Image 1 (cartoon, rainbow, N blue to C red):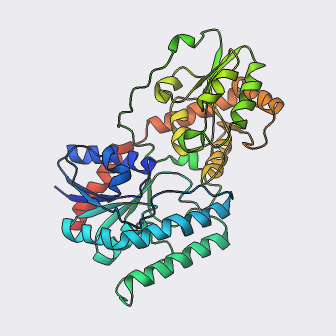
Image 2: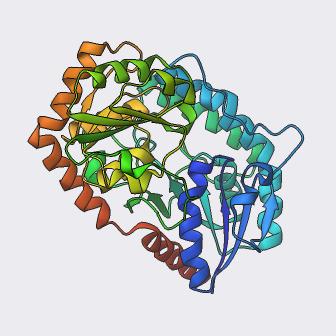
Length: 390
C-alpha cells in the first residue's frame, strides 16, 4: 500500500473533491496524510486523519475579493494570495514531506509550494485541478508574467541546485494532472497549458448537511428555476436578485427559488421563494433551469441534472466557464451588473422554451454522469505511487 500526502490551500471548494478521492484511497488501504491549514479546514477532515498543519502566525489564508475584474483580478490573486501563501508554506510542506516520506503527493493547482517541494525532494506527484478554466492559457502578457513570478519563486526556494529543472509552470505535474471536469465542457477553442491531463468529472461522495426546505411550495403546474450566485458572491449586492424577482413576477407560469439574503424575503413576489440556504442537489431534481454565476461546481451540478442555465459571471474563472457553457450550447449569457428587468424576462423565457439548450444540457449531463470521478482519480494516484516505488 502507498503512502500519500495531500496538500491544498485553505479553500473548502478545493478540499471537497480531495475528500472524496481520499475516501476511495483509504478504503483501498492506502496510508494518507494531509498538509493544510487546520484552522480553516481541519474540522472538515475525517476523524483520525493524520495532519501536518500549515498554520502560521503570518499566514495569508483569506482571499480578498478584488474590485477589478478579468485578467487584472488574476494577477492580483497571484500577487496577494497564491505567491505569498507559497512562500510561507514551503518550509512547512517540506518538513511534512520529510517526516511522512510519501510515495506520491497530490498537490492542488493553487498550492504551488507542494509542487516545488515534490520537485526538490524527488517525489512523484499529481496536480489536482478543481476547475476547467485553470488549464487554459490566458493572454500572452499575463502568461509571461506568471512564468516570471514562478521563475523567481523557484530561484528563491531551489537556489543554485542545478539538478532540479526549472519550468515555466511548475504547478502542473509532469506525471499527471487530475482535472475534475470533462472535455465536452472544456471544448477546444482556447489553447491549454502543455501538460498530461486526465478528465475525471466531478468528484462526489461527501455528504452535505441537511437543510430544511418547504417542498410543498413548489407547484406542478409551473416551470421552476433556481437562482444562485454561490456562497462567496451571494451577499455582495442585492440588485441582481431584485431584478430577477421583478422579471419573474411578470412570468406567472414560472416559480423561482432564489438563494439570497433573507432581507429580500419581504419584497419577494408570490412566485418567488427566497432562502438563505437550500438542499441544492435535491432541489435541482425539481427544477427546469438554473440562473447562476458560472461557478464550476454549480455548473457541473446543474448539468448533471440535464438542466440548461443562464450564466451571469462575476469574477475569477467564472467568465471563462460561462463561455464554455455557452459554446457547448447549454446556456445563455446575462450581464450580472447591468441586466435590466426586460432583458432578464426575455432571457428566462428563452431558457425555458429553447429545445436546443435542453438537448445540449442533457448531452453534457450524460458525459458528466459517465465520468470516472473520485474512484478514477484514486486509481491514477495509486498507479503512479506503484510506479514510483518500482
